[in-house]
Amino acid sequence: MAKVRGAIVVDVEKCKGCGLCAVACPSSVIALAKEVNGKGYNYAYMANPEACIGCANCAMVCPDSIISVYKVKLEANA
Amino acid sequence: MDVKDIIKEENLVYSKSKVLTDNIMHYCPGCTHGVVHKIIAEVIEEMGIQDKTIAVSPVGCSVLAYNYLDIDWQEAAHGRAPAIATAISRLHPEKYVFTYQGDGDLASIGTAEIMHACNRGENITVIFINNAIYGMTGGQMAPTTLEGMKTATTPYGRRVDLNGYPLKITELIAQLPGTCYVTRQSGHTPAAVRKLKKAITKAFENTGKNKGTSFIEVVSTCNSGWKMPPVKANEWMVENMFPFYPLGDMKDE
Image 1 (cartoon, each protein chain N blue to C red):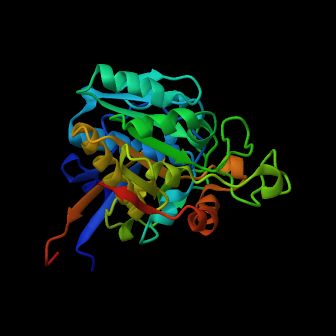
Image 2 (cartoon, one colour):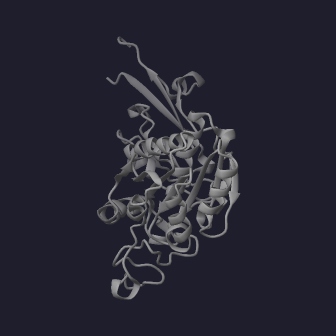
């Protein structure tokens, strides 16, 4: 069981669907949605939220700086 | 634990720098310009020099960079950013002055300006985005275009007998005694982004210490100009650009 859990928030309307975050993610959390945003881009979303470790790699490579990363440490016996 | 329990203000570990404005960038999806803008914004925020930084924007895709970074900007004529930066840094020696230039701006029309600014050792930082193509005007051949690379003006690939050799301008600049820090970085992976951030921090610190010109080349992608999807453009850059433009420090004094 992972000791940390993370989550990301993508600003959907600003996402251009380049997919660089999905490649940078070490635990394959991110995928591009089948739906499109107002500009017609397939935006990024958490397809597998349980696996996110909050490493912020996706936010670091995002060219449009639209990803915010949250992270919590889990209790030892949780 | 539910995702809603994780997304709380106190758990925030990474978000957009305050130096970046809320405007949506006009760059194509996956453009390296966005990554470099973000890193510059983070460095400026961490060093606390937002009101002491003056940037000079080039002609090229990043001509509108003043819309995205909340610092003072001056627009220069094509290729003349180092000349403007020279004036600003001499008039305001306490400011952190940097130029942000592409390869068409710096390595082509502005070669004279960058060479002489670096040779004089002006106290500025130069951030040079090298994507081996003229992105804004539609993907024509640049001086830095690789041999055999297809562009709008070299549809059968760049031929050295006709178009000359690709220009390694960073190597030329590293030989000039006025420069104190010359490096080549990239921004395609999280590790590369961290290294680039360190390099930009060092360059700004050099400017603060009045050490001379710091020059950072960022090997970048131009997925529209290269006619590739963003992820494939990054792979192409690793396979083709890095052997010719190897990453690393060339000079650090």
